[in-house]
Amino acid sequence: MSKIVIKFEDDVSTDAIYPGRYMATVLPTETPAYAFADEKAFNAKLTKKEIPQGSVLLAGSNFGCGSSREQAVSCLKGHELIIVARSFARIFRQNSVNLGLRTVAVPDIEAAEGDDLELGRDEVVNRTSGRRFRVEPLSSTQEAMIEAGGLIPYTRKRLVA
Amino acid sequence: MTIAEKILARAAGLPSVKAGDVVEPKVDLAMSHENAALVINQFNEIYQGTMLPAHVWDPSRIAIIFDHRVPAESWKTANNQRKVRQFVTAQGIGKFHEIRGDEGGICHQILPENGYVRPGALVLGTDSHTTSHGALGTFAMGIGATEMASVWALGVALNVEVPATIKVNIKGKLPSRVYAKDIILHLIGKITANGASFKVLEFHGSTIRRMSVSERLTLCNMAVEAGATSGIVPADAETLRYLKEEAGVKERIAMLDADADAVYERTVEIDVTKLVPQVACPHTVDNVKPVSAVAGKKLDQIVIGSCTNGRFDDLEIAAKILRGKKVARNVRLLIFPASGRIYQRAMEAGIIQTLARSGAVIMNSGCGCCLGIHQGALADTEVALTTTNRNFKGRMGNPNAEVYLCSPATAAASAITGQITNPQKGGK
Image (cartoon, rainbow over all chains, first blue to last red; front, side, top):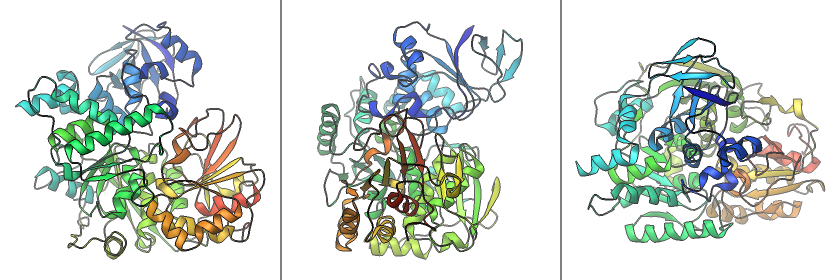
């Protein structure tokens, strides 16, 4: 069971997730400090480790729109959040697969902050409301990348094959 | 097949592909900017424990251009840039553009003006505005740093989903002081910020055929703001003219167009005959209004530049409006020519002098303040009007400021009055 700790609307941009002014910071060990840096209350909870790993960030459609900056993924991965959204921007989605950030696309999801979700492969169940929602699948290649532990080990396997 | 399908089929070595297929295409050009520093980390990580030498697959197909933070705004960036230089030398990367007033500039200007992109090519870049290069009939899309590291190692992209294509037919003659920027803002407003998500926008119609490559770059640049994977203008006589005359390409250039029976997901029709200057209002790019709806809004900073609108014709339009006029005392006008070559051409044409005399600050070529790192941060509650491509909250360095997007003509006319101004009425 995963609890929704925060809910965002549509079109959350990479500038909101990881503001451009921190872009000179690239290391995945350093980027989590600036996750949602301008959402000060949420950033404080994250950096003080008040949000348990495996918690759900819920959003509307087009989550991660904008820049290709990978920091927007590594900063969330650092807190081991799970992103559930109605849809994702393409680059953000692929970056998440590449770096092992768990994203779940649920086109019709209806849930509120505090709700508990059961995240299945094909279906998400909102345990608070009892409603079930279909999950938009990843490509089989993306599944294989996740299975391999991300794009780096996946590419490594291809290189030595 | 659509243009995107043709390019991906060719690059993947398949007779045909259709929307929804996942392919592994060979990459013709792999572009990065400062974030090459992160790509290098991931690239070296791939080789960990393999006993293989960490060599890029083809150094002649990799382009690296410094533009996002030039000159370096911090020691962190300076260290990253040095690390990239060392990698470029060690690997023999061919298409490297330093921080220079002659060969430097914004990656999305450097690639076309040096003839690095050709019709039919597959171009990947670690920048979302890589969609720009579709202006030359290429399939060009943005990817992340780790995916680029994988491309550097293998020469192929491992998970490219063939996108469905939306055909955009644009017809009619543009009214005076209405430009490609106004068309793309209008289109994004119409189809919304995710209206082309995971899709290609293929641009057709008489208006497109009359557009210069520079204007087509503006159009394709912002395709990503509608969520598009790529924006493509089919190559034509203007593409050839640009590549030969402006980019100095000597070899034969192959052309590529969609098949007559290509399958499109849908068609969007736009008649620009009565289009008026458009403005994207805070804080999303699809919050688009006619300029009259926001005219009179008091401004603090105006920016002309970026990969969207920092080319010669953009500066020329601004100079025509600002000639003999002064920038209003309540605003700062910052101008970023998109490349050193454009800067020099604008100097030779007297454009730089005209702009500087009006009170504009001529900045060095590069991304400047567009992404909010340096060269023009906004104060709390300040309002900026800019020819760049994004107005997300915090985009220009301050989440408590507002950013409006417009064409160079609207920006220049507004610089004279210090408030958002219709260039068809004011600033003549």
